[in-house]
Image 1 (cartoon, rainbow, N blue to C red):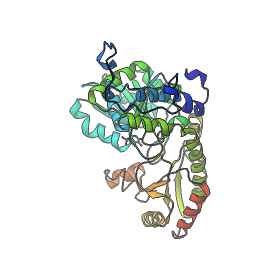
Image 2: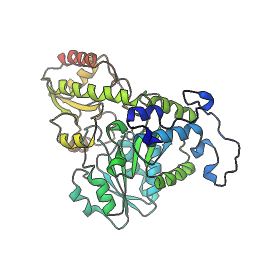
Image 3: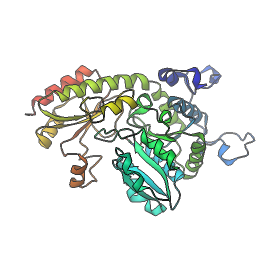
Image 4: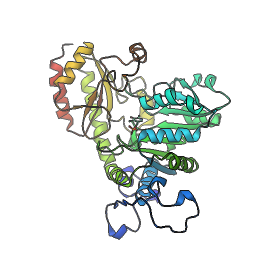
Length: 388
Ligand SMILES: *Cc1c(COP(=O)(O)O)cnc(C)c1O
């Protein structure tokens, strides 16, 4: 079926849609029924029940997600963290060891550092930009390697090509959190990754009105993860499946706008005398610009930047903008600003933050779909109050 639709934009609209249409409905109806009549199923996991992640709303969104990343299967979960934790607890068992990128999303970092030990799981952080350093961290019980498409909030792009190669050479499962790139900009299965994880809360849904997660990848692994998810209970409700399904249909047009807008805003900021540094993989000044061009079809709507005049200037700038909303999270249609030292990385000690390059004055921007010129005008005005 997915081979019928070549481009992502077409798959977003047509892949996974029920055939024939249900009573002719053009839009996938919501099946808000906890259980379905017994139909001779012989396996527990095949009984039709919301927690077993197999209602018509689940099945349709699973097919669409798998088609988007040219992967075999997909599974939705109650949140990005439900997807990440359930995937990790499936590929790792007590006594196993994980290699993980040293700049993880805060929730994932905390899962490893605060919860892994109680499950009998061990981990080592790796510099994902330096594959030569990974082998020395391998242990006989190492089972998986975990990275992110682009890091938060510095938008670093690790040596993603080497991860599946290293995993294959050493019998590991390769996992990537693809939330920041979205399937529009990066499709991990095409590069040999076993599993791609998403917080659908962000770009996939794109409308800042639900929390959901997804796991996309090899069918054998997805089936095991589905059984684990059925036991752990992190199922996505059919109404949220419907909202995610609806939100995803505009992913291609949203991301096209966000990719283009973020690049223009990054270029504007980089050329402004009050700005010290802009982190965006689409800028030639980005240390991994060439790698990002090779891997990604666009650089996303995420960027971060620093003022020459530091923290006070950052605070003044944020106060003087009128268009962006000061709020955590990302990937929605509205432009958002945050200061990671106060939000996502507040739990880190100030010296640790400085060591990884997150200054107190660093501002993270999630570009929405407002007119680029309006965002730039607003920023230009707000920057007038910030002496370089
Ligand atoms: C938000 C986010 C998550 C967690 O997703 P939730 O839907 O909030 O559980 C995981 N990884 C990344 C990169 C994220 O941005």
